[in-house]
Length: 97
Length: 140
View 1 (cartoon, chains in turn purple, orange):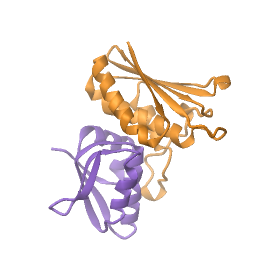
View 2: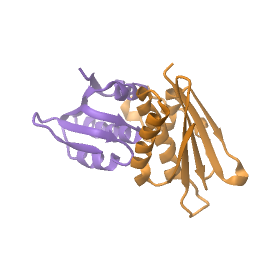
View 3: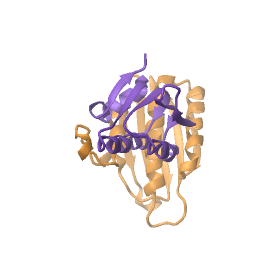
């Protein structure tokens, strides 16, 4: 369903579906990160508004202490959702290769 | 042909709903590039029922999902039983251009679904205490 954890390069790697049923688990993990953090979304298949809320809350917290959440490897569907939600203006986002 | 199934209005049913939708796309021969968008819209509508279904009733609500292939896409019906009247098509717009400091949680899902579908309609026969949302999504 959803996996989230630190990858070998130090980025947070998220895999699967970030939906309403998984949002609490993702939030719980992201509440532990600090500073400038990269979220590798290469294997993130799907995100709903519950997932968007998790990312927004995390970005607000990190920015409050001069940190930032960067989103990398974003697939087309997820990128469309980010764009419609205006997230392209509040996150640094790089698309999947 | 229409493929239909009823789910309890509980968050735990979301995984079954996703599996059902994927199966229905296969049965109906609907283009798979529409699947995630349909999943997104269904999840937003379904979780809206889970969160706000009925203030008057203590009985759990249930939700019937129907999917039917149409030329170039799919028509989806979501009927929620035992719920209050809440027209999801009239939910307030969200200003997605606001800076992060002014962004507030809530409302984004219903705002986004209007951008994602070709059309969406809402009905609420008061005497039956059930809402019905019908939306269409095509590749066009």
